[in-house]
Length: 244
Image 1 (cartoon, rainbow, N blue to C red):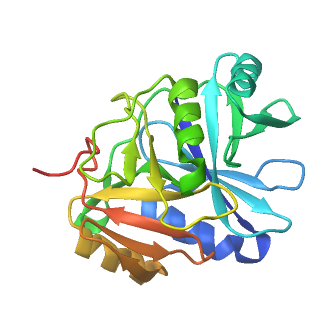
Image 2 (spheres, rainbow, N blue to C red):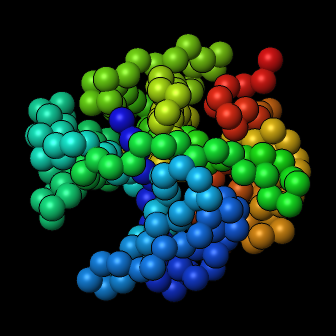
Image 3 (cartoon, helix red, strand yellow):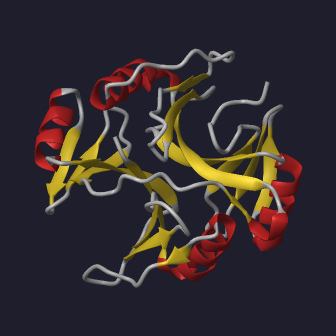
């Protein structure tokens, strides 16, 4: 299934956030669309887009998912039987997962996965993963929901806190669930970039306006100009796998 990640942020920080992500991913923003010019797509140099932006009237910056299907109404109905809550049918169907994560069922169309990019001869990188940050009490229900809705199984991981789901080679985004240590009101999401030189990629993103805030043995956590967290990871941007 084709997944699109939406970068949601307040209008007050939209210009800085969208300029950052366009430069970070070597994409070109599309013309604005929507009744209030609230949407735009980040167009890659090759392949079909899998990143879009939404300018919010209010609320914090975050990430939500679009699920593309030939019959989005039928997909939404199935999601509800699996535990989702329907919020609205606007031609696309707005849903919330059992843990409260916003996602939409939308028409299909995209088919060609874009390639990693290396800006000015720098490291190759690609936004290729959406990580769901899940409070412990919500993990079982959230994992069961996404596995059944996407018809995927978890991939074996060396860390029990990370539960990636299988991704087909022609799909742009993998979904991974991360069990949080502490409780939170609802599931939230962040983007992960795969790259072949993490220190160099982190330095490039910091120069574009990101701020480094932490990390682990195989990832670095940054925040973008909207204050939204994301991670740069030691994974092959072509396959999504960790280097051997």
